[in-house]
Image 1 (cartoon, rainbow, N blue to C red):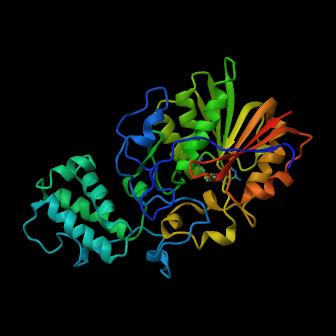
Image 2 (cartoon, helix red, strand yellow):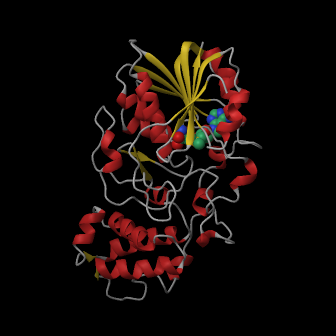
Length: 375
Ligand SMILES: C[S@@+](CC[C@H](N)C(=O)[O-])C[C@H]1O[C@@H](n2cnc3c(N)ncnc32)[C@H](O)[C@@H]1O
């Protein structure tokens, strides 16, 4: 296809855990970002936090989830009486960490939770407010009643298949710890790559103020990562979901980026005015009919963040159609897409309007990003 270039991004592949697709990104990185995004975040921690799955709909549901009915609600008190819950029957509440880890792993195994040991380690470390590795090298740590109860509460949520990022109400994105709840999508590793792509281009723009639109901001992860990394930028972050915008607002305040990022509630690009140098979006791109078949953990996420309409391309098409009206000459659009969509998209893009149409590959060698340059 003339004008369509496939470019492989030569990144170092992050080590995925066995049998897990795209889970290698949810590292618990301790170092906070100060102004500049750390490039080393992908290599810093030894073991990834489990339970965050790729949004790619090509991924089959896990065996554990097959045939199981999804519970959307967070669990109530039922599991508190669960006899298999670690420490449930003990009258002596001072446990050793090793015992809780052992019993907790068995408990999650019985609940058919994948990677039960790793999940249990993360949860106990969280309950004890310890680093996971510190917990592992101190198995004799005594756990009091309050912390045992906290551990059990978090384990009950995991047993219901809630993703750890929602259980902990935080998620590590590009080395910084975002506040997160069920109103916003759990940011994916591919989106960190999208941000890197945008940063590479943005750093070449010699301007006092680079104007960037983040369409479908969710938790605000993309806007925040850009704002923290680029001194000379102004961001407009838009979402249709008022609840997601609240989450983004909390993060913007947390990282004191109020001056650089302005939030707006809108459901169409055509509702926006102004001119931008760059538009970036990780839109919902999963076909409506596929969502129900996705992994159970994904079902905890807002449908609005996943559902891309019949063909998955509803928002993608709208952005491509409307972007020229709000882009400056030579401006660029960056979109995260599903791999399969790179086949159909070139036929939907007007070569009279766009001078470059480039697909970029992710670390897994899949075409996951579309870059367009306005003539
Ligand atoms: C895939 S999530 C991306 C969230 C975040 N940017 C990220 O990368 O993790 C898509 C976001 O788009 C929002 N959204 C869905 N339809 C929209 C629309 N028509 N207009 C604006 N935002 C929309 C959803 O609420 C959701 O927050």
